[in-house]
Length: 426
Image (tube, rainbow, N blue to C red; front, side, top):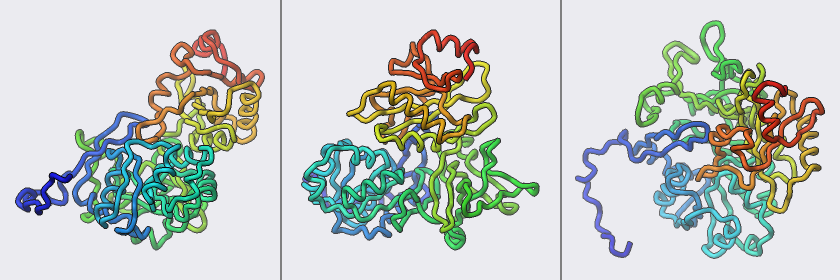
């Protein structure tokens, strides 16, 4: 940096660059499929650089960033907003829960960018003296669970949490400006008119927005759940993905509310309450069908995450020969201080019987030493689903739901063979 010239860059170098030209390609995480390069235009980058405005972010702030810069939250949000207002950034190579508050105290950090898993790790760390002497007032990010939210604020005294919803490639975003635990923002009728975003009912059978007899989608009423769509126009475009046009075109819907309109489908389902607050429910394709019923991975995960000795869960579907749909399987990560025993297995079985409908109860449990996550702390489902419940492939403890005794039992090679041959009903 000391050797870099401070002379202004010659404008001729960017004379042919337009707002619609790509400034970067950011790959999707690939949690449920192969990663795709999303096109980030200069226009999107510029718009992102102003997104911290509502939080009062200014040149006086010190932003702490532990996410990799190829992550859209790190690049498009944290870094570009720091540059835009002239703030200071403390950049750490990777997230370390044990050093987090020490760094914040040492570098006089005032705000940080998070993704939900980070805050869950922080609340599970043992007390650290430095957590009482930091100057952090603001956290900005997404994916924070409601139960972790309250615990995090109570323990670490971070006054403001700005939870938002957004996607790397989509022209749709909402932000929770009112510190409502679990909410990603509001979508009142007025805000819907201003932002051109709508929530429409989901057809559970085809996992697509529902259309009535006239072919139009139906707006979701408060208290219900629906898919978030964003209207496209000359001013709001969907830049899509680099490569085959089919990947981009598959996200665009036509004739949604009236003939000739175009919307981009976020593929994300939200609950909307009576105050028009939005709560993320699930991603279309993340859920699965089992014997004619739709299983919500979020519903199963929320039940199991309520157990005090469970650090986190990853819910997905696995195929069984001769069975309709996919059977539910959960990879469970116990807290470091906990060990697996029969009592815990029985407790988890009782909880699933009590809190979940029969079809949603996991048919398989896998206990992991460390949760399978991508480099950006998103749950990795593809590899887990591929490994399935075969004890010859999975070296970690496996259990299956024995319907005869209605309890979870250890799964070995013999039981696996019986399940695959259809000799043991699930």
